[in-house]
Length: 167
Image (cartoon, rainbow, N blue to C red; front, side, top):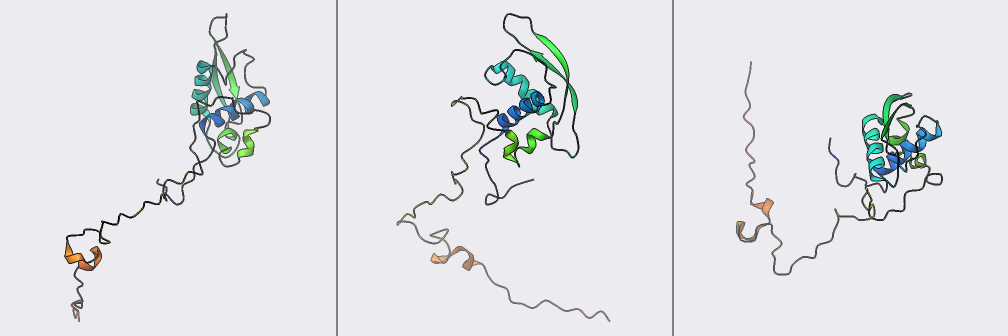
């Protein structure tokens, strides 16, 4: 598919918000393993959470559950893996359409100014006003067609269509 520039919208939230929504949903339903890692600040844990999001989260009608292996990388402990049942996997991506699902009061975004996975919605790059140069002609190709605008140089054929009698 394609989006026309005038209909495209850039949201102020994106992939990391869906990951945070996934983590919040799983902890809310108490389906996430009790591991002592900080998913939102440690890069290895954030990578694992993003892989879970990309593998299991999708917009689909009805209840969407899956069984996944969650790896834990706790400090002063060997890496472990936990088999868990993830539930409500269609809720986090629906937050793109219903932003209140991201629960900003309960799970605020991490205080990282160096990472943002969205673009500025107020920046309108499609309608930048370029000033017209005074030394340029109004025609598309200034030295062609004797100074006429581009479309006026095309010949117009007014010859009627040949009619055939099939009778």
